Length: 245
Image (cartoon, rainbow, N blue to C red; front, side):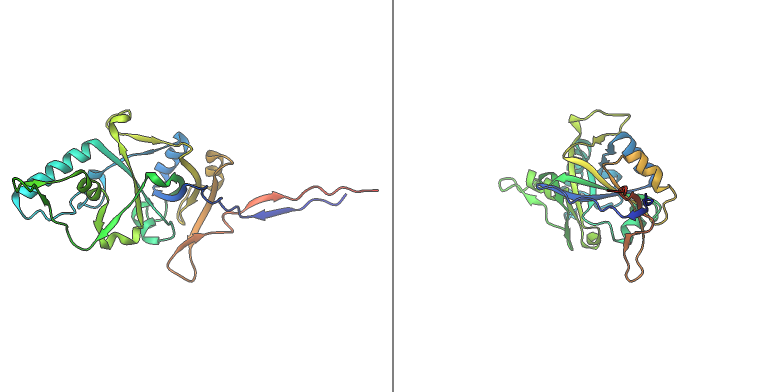
């Protein structure tokens, strides 16, 4: 009987099903391992984010406007959390800023499209609305929704989209909140950064067979992070060959 030979293949993650979108969450290796093990992601607060202009995408030069806006931002920050994603994982600046200088990981989730809120990138601040009767500063619910997803245009490279979370519906764990994995927040792929020191075998054991785990490298012909096909291979056993007749 001829001996079956081992074959190496690179498994590609399946596309997102209809109604869901694949989005990417970059983080440190430590946090990624915890997220995968506990099947949940930490919910951020606006005040935790690295852009100090979060919720401040309006002109605040007027003292009354400024007081109104700052009061409203405190209310939003207390009531609403968020999870930030990118629509792509290939930009090396994302890995440098959010994934431990390329030593972290990227988690690819399938998320219901209706949950996602694309960030709007602006080159100038909007004006604060006024009450038509009193002339006092007025921030409507529509204004709040706009503030929650407005950033300066120079952040546009992130291609960011967000899930907003009502914190009142979740358990408070020592001041932290977590968003559990589910059928509409499903982890489908994990990408280890080019400098990630955790072995791909260990991550595959942790993630399970339903999640595609791959290794990344720096591209040779462009300023991109791409799949390291050699580092991402798995052994596929050829079917047994049997004699007939």
